[in-house]
Length: 95
Image (cartoon, rainbow, N blue to C red; front, side, top):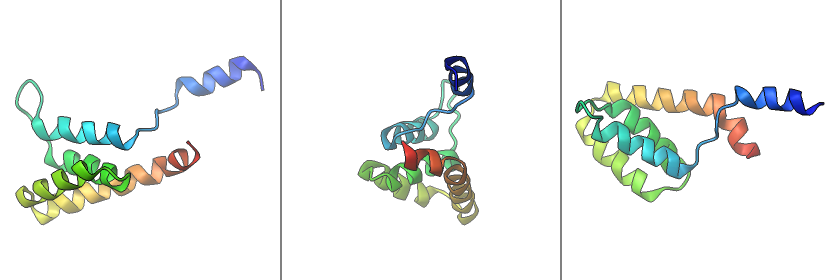
């Protein structure tokens, strides 16, 4: 394989997120943007994934968010987390 082929493969590659990165994404989604818009489903997904990586703070935030969410919202967050794992698990295990 040539160097140019390796570089082309990296251009479209996604970064593998760490548990800390996932935790930060959860914080961003739960606290909102400049317009005050927040997404509890997305926040729960990221906190759940971060908790799976051993982040204890993410586990606590996920538990708090769950108190404010419906069962359907939690189920959707879990579906999104499973979908993320299905597409990123192999990359994460090889990292």
